[in-house]
Length: 278
Image (cartoon, rainbow, N blue to C red):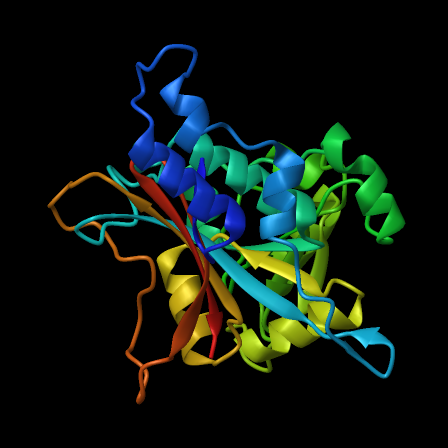
């Protein structure tokens, strides 16, 4: 893993060393000069949430974590695994370990076979010090509650799974969700979920460090609502062609949302970008 941005003394020294020292020079291993595997806690420093507060209360911060191929595909054969990498999955785990809650769309739950978030020993102390539970809650965003509530995500999570839906949701499906052990939260007046209200509902429960893993439809709704603060986008050095979705779908915004680059890492040709709203 190499840090390419922001440029620091370390990155400048790495670049100079990489240019000046041959990988096969006596006593030097090239991979150590320009590249090495970063530890989880090092990655956590790069991806730390901003400590923004209003009147002593943490302000909600919603980040997205997505992966895309060079030609814009967010999936291959319906799943993101085929375009991911070991480093991408390390960052995936770190982002979850830093979050209070993970928002995910119902379609992604069905396609990706979502399971409960797990506790990570490396982050146990820091989560406890931050007043967080042992693992982030999973919050499933769904209008129709067309979900299999017998899955472990609902019946045996370390932290109770949340179901975000609209006030007009079918009572029998709400009852099925609650019977499984999930907690149903209403974040919309009709059948659909209002993205801005979903952020507020979670923040009101103290879940301010928010992370969404999509899918594209949910991310598109969050972008359109103007509630996305940060995008962590992995650029996979692959080409898939075909008709796969982009990372965000739905109607376009009237004015393109402007984000600025906050950090850039690289490993094995994968670029790990982090953009914040300008």
